[in-house]
Length: 216
Length: 386
Image 1 (spheres, each protein chain N blue to C red):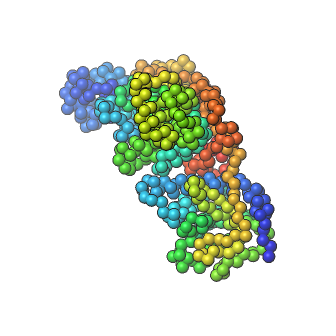
Image 2: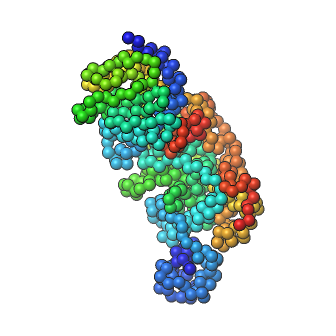
Image 3: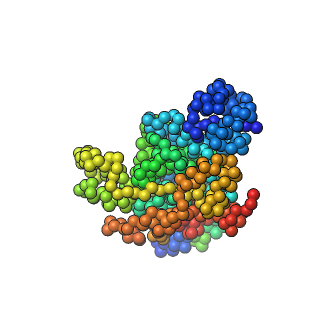
């Protein structure tokens, strides 16, 4: 049984860094902010099940809004996000660390025959990770998200071995943290005004660029 | 066709009550009420008198009101001491200045709006706002007004300071709403920055009014504190023992008042309540409650004047501008001169020993408003929005 190694996973993360380390984080951060905003504006305590569902719902919406090139956001039941590109597919699930797992409620499970799975990223890997009681397409790599203690989104690339006993999580062969993109973090933001620049705004004219008004 | 709303607008801009204007144009107040409500058109002689008294040209009164300019934060910002007349005047100034800039802005390419609108808890909203506005997470904002303008917020400054109101904000326009901050006072630079940050808080968090006015104001204050004095940095720079003299340098660096820094130190548990009270007592004793040492430059908005310079030359042809905008030339001149000329931004603040290295500076990633709708996000885009 060929199980992709950590090195395979790291290479995959590296080769898809733009998407995994930037875009997915951006979307998930936005979704998290929206979801937390709900609890704040409603002045209600955070309920992890609802929070996770809101994050998933908002993130799916943002992925749709992005209109990523050649990407389809699959319409699936409430168990994660499924992005289909021509040469790869991404499944993004809530990690089981923060209980309960919002991507997999019991009632949902009863009406869902299976955890929806598509073809996953490693195109050349055989389908080798069947889950207990699961008769659909085999599970391969997934992206798990969770909120850490500082309420920040963390993403992991996971090579799943089986479902946990409560069916709410995934036992992995390996689980690699997906780093946040860091190169932008070291660049000077453009709007700090600390560079001694001028207060002029970037205001090009609509109708000409001569800087002179046409007689009207 | 005379627009009654315009009569009311001109009257309120002149700071006149209905009774006062009616008396000056020698009609009874009831008639003026009818004219303002649009029930009757004023006869020519009355119209001439209104033109004479208010100074607004006839064309002004013939214009439709095409922009929605609600009361915005005036509803909950102004202090109890503000007269309703001043509130009306502030609002009318805001409306008129917004119409001016909106008319001119149609000739320019729009500055993309980079301001989140999310009702989340104030510190998180402030962090998100810094990120959206391409401001670093941990450095002082050199010129908040300019940064707001460069993020698509229309910042306007009325030429006639009003007592008791420093600034107010609204989302204006019809379909595509624009965030607008109207500065209404000659307050010192540090206080003005806090007021502008406070108004940004309203724009970001308070699309709809939920909770009491006190709570809304408190949230905007929390937002302003976090925006101008990020907690993480304050924890590093407001080192005990906090004394008034130790705050001078921080005041200059962060562009906020010493009193605001003391308050922030207390909120962040850097000083105890007893220390807080003691420092407040010292502030009062040294006469610094109304006038602090170290002057922070007053930040003035630039966009309106820059547009005027592009469209009407530099020096500005005020007559031409007034004629095209259907406003009195003197009014136009005063408004333009209340805005900043082209000048360098506030002097660069030298880094202190506490300032983290360039590599260590974090840029808070992302916010929703910058999600592009047409493509995958390139690294260039991300840099812009981070």
